[in-house]
Image 1: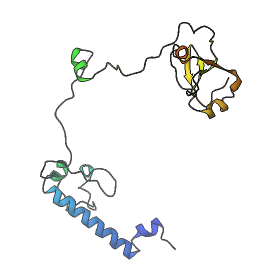
Image 2 (image 1 turned 45 degrees about the horizontal axis):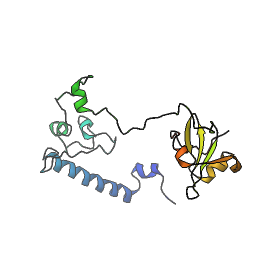
Image 3 (image 1 turned 120 degrees about the vertical axis):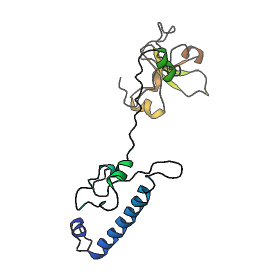
Image 4 (image 1 turned 60 degrees about the horizontal axis):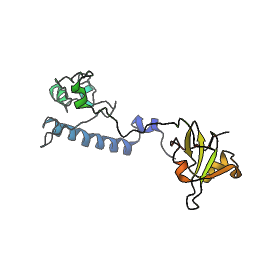
Length: 189
């Protein structure tokens, strides 16, 4: 029968206690070696460690507590070197030419939404359209003076449209209607 977490944490299960102590010992050795190098490698990259008990960074460990896991492994000075504090302030950018140099706010790649002022002759909102070209299987719904593409056959069926209601129109006329969002499968008449 497996052990409960309470039984494992109680210290009564010797193999687990030894296993955990060995892992903690290896981890504390790594911290101690890294602390002697100011928590940085040869490329000046900062190593970061956490307190096993709290999950917080070791810069928050209370070394004054007599039972602290890290007592004897770290000094207060070493612990403080684990954290980095920057004295540089982030510049405040207001709507000036400097902001435009830092953040490109001219989003030219975003899609513009357009609506037809007037639909082509013989086409009305809520019409179902298909192309006269037999090789083009796309189907459209006209709504709000836009053509909305049905993504697949199941969307047409799920929305309850009758295939006999589709108007076959030249693709050049269909393209005169601005493109809108795709028809969702949950569309209702």
